[in-house]
Image 1: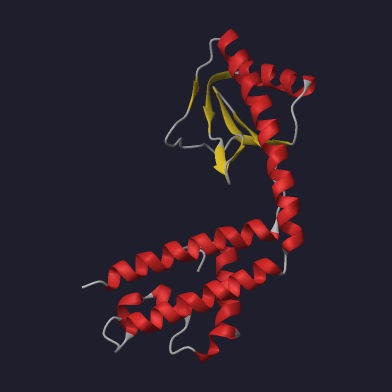
Image 2: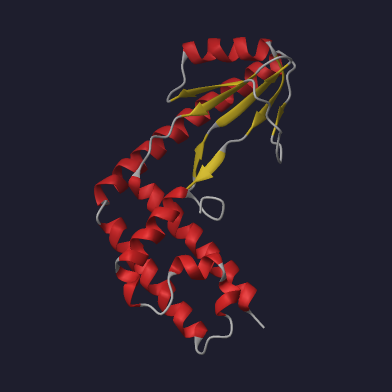
Length: 198
């Protein structure tokens, strides 16, 4: 089901359907995969609201079980934000000196020849790396994203023969995965409900 939703969300849906969702009239997987199939069922809106609430409660309970991961995630996010700020300033300054534009693209088609470099802090060595990357680039695409109000940096150095991605490393965190899936499931339920609207 990864083509309909993320792998982590797929795992949560499977767990829910096999445990807490057993007492529901329809499974979350069946509903989200083909909501129109259930449009004519009596009291379907009530069933969907109940299903959604049960699934949210299931995820909230899982989030409570990883409370220690929340503190770790917030610390990691603070560090990512600080490193992003430092590296972004370095890239902006050095790109200007080298007359290499830094853009915020809507999207870029990336070729097969790309090296991905993950770092977790700035400093003289990273500045030297940025200089090397800029020397072979005709533009820098800034794909920095915001997570819970903090920045997590990602830059594509696009060159003539090869592209390099410089990313702020954010380690896996169960709390973050649960939060992301909860948001994704909310979006999926909203989209399914719109399909069923008269």
